[in-house]
Length: 230
Image (cartoon, rainbow, N blue to C red; front, side, top):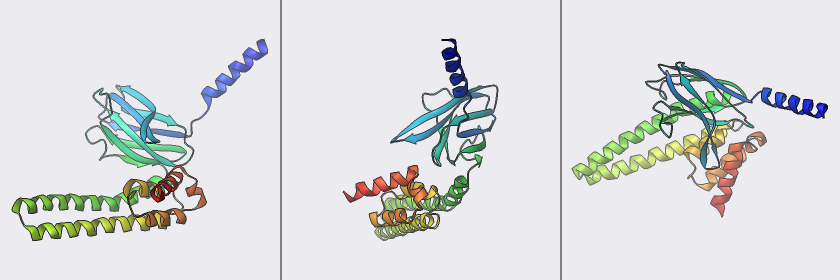
């Protein structure tokens, strides 16, 4: 009986001391009190995998298990609300990811140092942000054209928007194919051009390496394509 109790105790100690796959740590300048959440998408829901309440400290450390590289969210609740009001999206792999930011501009000021996938994702975002900025400009132009009742300008706005959308989709398709060995490829496909023509989505999936096809987002893309074909 003593041996059994000792074995159970040893197993408990080993379980508690098991290192987690992913460590997310960092510093939020100006934050003295609040709760930071580490979240990820599970099926169609955002779930919390770890959290830490800070009181007097601006440093945090969070942990998660991770099978394949995937996107996580770092959320900040600075007013004890029921839901965090700001989220930083980042791509993580096993190991350490460091995120430093500020309380004033939590999302905008975020500096992320971690996985190779994160570096590639940032490269993608630098270009895709320009498309989103241009889209906002077209929305403003559309409002002004309708307000002025200028049908010619409204038609031009529609054509400009269609060109912008096609350009964004083609850029994402080429980006995914050119980075077929990264989990970022199926991720941006699912998040940015999920409603693209099925033949484009299938071209991206078929170009992925076997390792990426077997990843979380590779499997999700495969299912999405199959659903579209039904």
